[in-house]
Length: 248
Image (cartoon, rainbow, N blue to C red; front, side, top):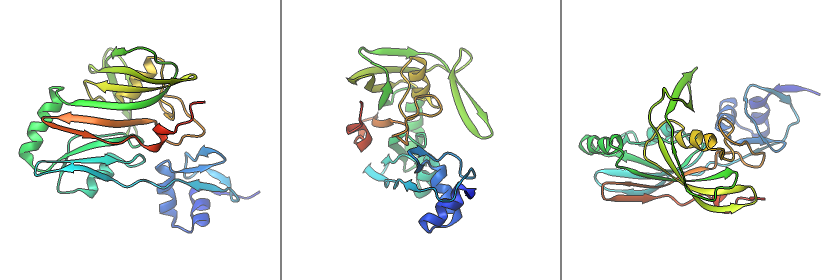
């Protein structure tokens, strides 16, 4: 049996460039034998058959002279979204595999006012997640989070040396040993919801770093559903995975 690097095998199968193939793998869009292909340079059999997930497009939720609200698709970094709107100023970030509401200021005056609202914890941020375990009552998690960087990759954990962080978990649906929950955060620490849910014993499905990896899911099942700032209220519809997710 012959072996070659995964991105080269994918490039040949799909008729695309090596760099494009590597990008697709790095974004988490490629699966083989029911599992996400994790390492683009990993050696695999040359007869491997891949499935490639198509990335959704960015949707504009609302805009006026001051603010632009977008629905970010999963598998796209916040910086990639920002590069598509170079004239505007990013106000909040989402993890690559998290979808939902992202905000941009259209001028510096509004940016300054909006950043103060975020710093003062006056912005309402509501997420939805699918977790492992039965969530049957409201849970308030008020635990500090410490974030460190290793080779450019950020990783967070609950640690008394960290910054204050508060998340409130509300049950929405329980099926078997999995739950759909609403999460409202008062702060915005790096990977806050993923870390807090895992700390509480309810890891997010599809989260290979902090949560519960799933062979049939190739993303973190976390979505920024609603954000309110000043008199604005923005909502991004839940992706298909959250509506037809097979709990069983």
